[in-house]
Image (cartoon, rainbow, N blue to C red):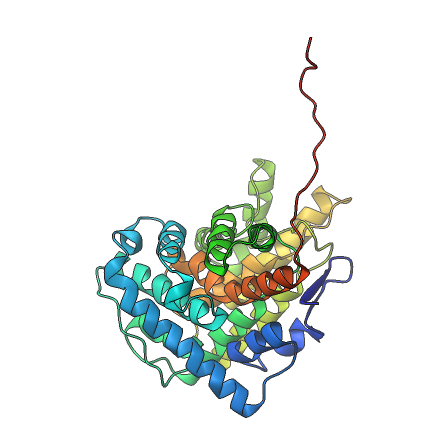
Length: 346
């Protein structure tokens, strides 16, 4: 019941709602409640959830001294996986909101350590998106940036039966606990074929530099047999609807005076890439995916490129927790069959 990905029409439905109507209109707390309970929260329920997320952030921060070298590892997803693995159900982390809150603290602590800064204690008075940005940057974000991150976290909160979600459901189906399932999901998301690498999209934009250079640069890359970053998706046969959502979020930020100046360049590169790819591969659909505008949005919000995939996990954990609950309710072991193709015994 959690989400449906319609690759032919380019539509993502989350618990009965089009993602293009949710993102930018509701907060991360709202979409978490929608996934976890099946209904939009009342005002009172929203505040309860905000407090539960804040409690999770506080518990996660209290655990930092006991995490060993987890938040000092070189790779952010290694750090997130190792830190999360320290959590236990008896410490309160069988609760989705608390676990979700803790992941934001771990991702922020790793990002700050990478810059040589100490982790910041969470602020329970702030929303989840606002506090995550504050713990990353060291200062309170303005409302426009908070809204921008909310739009991103809502957009990536769930996306059908993807690899990391399936990993979480497989672990859950064995009767294992929530933390173990989320650790498995983080491990799957780390893979570049799933969590992706939005940072290279910025490398591409940096290399192109100006909108007028987009077409010749794309042509040269294709002639050299190289991949165009942020284009194409395994499921969507048309433009990823999440790309449209995030493009609008960047435009709203620009309207509020928050800009890196990359939006016009990104649009020119997308247009050039879509045209060139259609000409080179007429039988394939290679349109912009979520990574393309994720890179521009998170860069506009001031995040380091290395923090992009951990921030993806900060949003996607809401969906993982919802799938864990749904799988647990089903109560059946996932045990795929396989076809043996090895040698027969003699």
